[in-house]
Length: 170
Image (tube, rainbow, N blue to C red):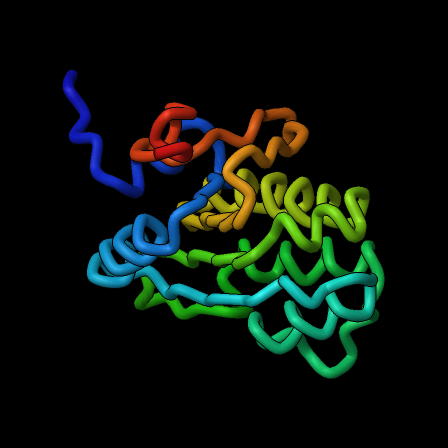
């Protein structure tokens, strides 16, 4: 059986977290996803330096409840609610796309926290798929050589257009 490999299929085939370098490639991708019913949530992470910055940015972007605990356990719980479809998007949406822009700055400032966020997202996205909910995290880096450690026991690939090093080094 041949499966049509639409853009969302290509992005999710190797996990729920994908790297992007060029803003125009990211914008083309998010445009396609939005056109196909995905709720696209953009977060600029360039100023994130701490747990507080992460919790402020995500709780606002994904509409976490007022009682959100602002710690890593609470982040896992809230992303579980996102995966269940209770926060950040509606049943009418095809799925949710979290776009983390300028992530290399955050990954440099706090590598452990930056990894934990992506790892938690990947695990919860996998849980969401089990109930038919599609979650994607598109990580935009201003550094074309950014390498992130695997999340959710899966390496983070570059997107299909920029996966060759030569595509990121014109």
